[in-house]
Image (cartoon, rainbow, N blue to C red):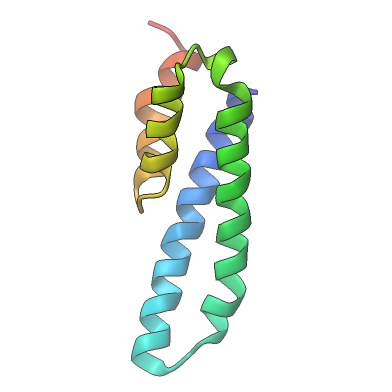
Amino acid sequence: MLTNLRRISVIEAISYFALLIATILKWARDAEIGVTILGPIHGVLYLVFAAMILRHRTQLGWPWTKALQALVIGSLPVGGFWLDQKWLAPLQNPV
């Protein structure tokens, strides 16, 4: 479960960056196709990420407040990477 959550966190963050690049291209070159394709993909990935956080929060040992914080952090451009490294990786490899 934790490995899959870490993967979706990073994949969602990568899709966010790809969507940001597509958005810049849309504005700069009137190339809307990237946003048209990547927007829904990113949306679905974020929903999967959110569902996994909410479904497994008790297994992670997180109260609702931390789960909600994870959802907010995950909605930021580098949030998925940050969550993976700061909150999820230590759970997989405790010191």
